[in-house]
Length: 314
Length: 314
Image 1 (cartoon, rainbow over the protein chains, first blue to last red):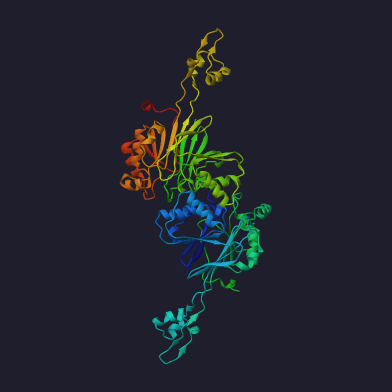
Image 2 (spheres, rainbow over the protein chains, first blue to last red):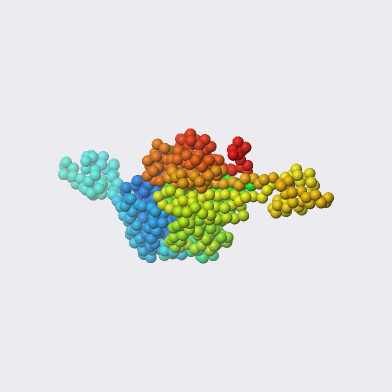
């Protein structure tokens, strides 16, 4: 029951050695989702051994080049590779025109089904669901229309209580009904064993929120409240807060403050300005406010466990 | 007196591990020129320690994504880096609309002087010159309008004949006139030493031709006749000639045949199809026809010496 996040690009607008522009893979229950698609994403996918063909949904936060300039290369590589399964691309108003203009100008043709979902970047709404998850987009506060994304596992079926099954000698054939349909079980003696006796509560649904790019914005707090993992951009140190305000980015302190107000489980910061060759100070600044902060590093895997550690259960 | 070519991307349309899409640096007399700009070019420039700011001219062959999708990222990085010197971009009809559409859709602004020169891809003409070189574009035979490029050093001044200078005791102050203005020298006795005695012929002008992407096309032969270094795409082995014909690419045999007909000094092949994990067979196929063939490898430096080896002087 995988739930893990892998940054492919942790730099801000200007790529520097070893730091690519924004792109990330979120793996939930072995479905992988691409979040942002900066220049070089298709090469980064290869470097970290993600099969391009496994991606069926791409979520673009906004149309600044460092979040979207790898999209056309990826979509057209699929054409050349003979993709025949549909692709869904989500992004704010303008994403359709961006894709279509590039396909025209580069003489490209998409033979597979490409569904482009233009989102209203001013509203918070559910934009996607499948068997395992729901995805919501919500407004971020940036210089151009920008969507944040919230991924939330659906409520899962209860877990089977192995001890109870053995105690009541439940046949294997009955287990599916007990787990998936909420069935009670009637013994040969006519005793009814209630479903609640035979099951344990499901693992809690896990959640991930993506907030990049954005200025400090407390309006995010109720939307991302209590998520297990928050990726929040931290382009600058607080000492450069004027630059952050001017460019509508966040400082590490901003990101940590939002994480604290939203009482998230873990904060991951990224989107580091190229002015910082070393990013440890960004982590230190964030940890002063929100201790459970990690630095996003390219190719690292950040896992959300099935169960929160006891001391964190409210 | 540098004259060297460094591939940054030697793959064809689909980038694979360690093989990027087309981009190349040509360094002539310490001016560097970028030829094609596939996705990831700005990162490749960094990897091979080319300072982006040194590029003042970019030459795009055609608008297929694998030759142009790195251009917007590079041009907008210059904006963020505060570039204040002009940039010239050369490319076939459509390059201007491609750049302008992307700048609009990605909300980007270019504060420096960006001169986009749309070339007529059907004609052979001189498109650029500076103190050191002239550049010509010429038609390639591909599925979309495509320009090849020929770079040729201008005739250089004669070399000073050191032995003659010593024999006639020529003062240093006179050397510039002798070398650059063709001055004779009059000794204190009134003897006139003719310029031809004091100088040696200049080094021959060196030349480089870029032919990618193109089907086999003998019309190239008179245009690239005798160049010192020819980069000619060799996407396929001859055993896949039908695929080459269909996609209007060349086989290694095609590239070598053109090199032989044009009597170039050296052939460099590249733009390898992602179907070939090893490209030695491409070289072998080409060398069977044109022995002085090398494989383009990313980051390698292919030098054109000041003087051709004696056995190659016609």
